[in-house]
Amino acid sequence: MTTAELIVSLARWWLIAGAAVAVVFLTIGVDRIDEDSRGAYAFRPLMIPAILLIWPLVLWRWMRLETATENWMARYQPPRAVHLPTAFVFAAAIAFSILAGLAVRQTWPADVAPQQLSEPEQ
View (tube, helix red, strand yellow):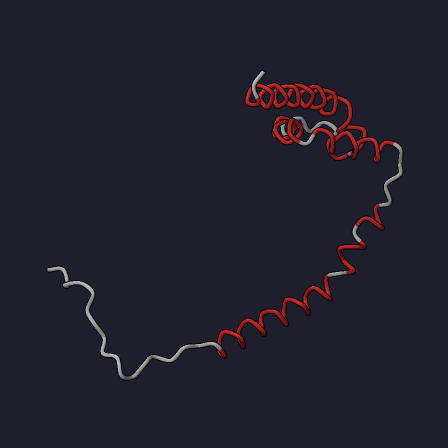
């Protein structure tokens, strides 16, 4: 078996496993973890491509939500904690970039005459 055949075979088995997870999750799981999705069947086919590709994450999140080991309040605390320092770093980086650009700005040599590179088109 060549490397290309192995990659195609692994991709095929990944998608088959993803299809099995999609069928089970979209028929049973989504109703159990999200009460707003009960009776809303039109959006479920839109989720199939994503579930085919990230099915291990879907299974992991489903297990976390089913076992109630997910702490929703603590979930967003780490990103929120770095918003203010990141804003200061970005502001400083923008100011530094502008100042560095002005510091290394080149001046046009006054003793060189401009040359026309090509004839103007008629």
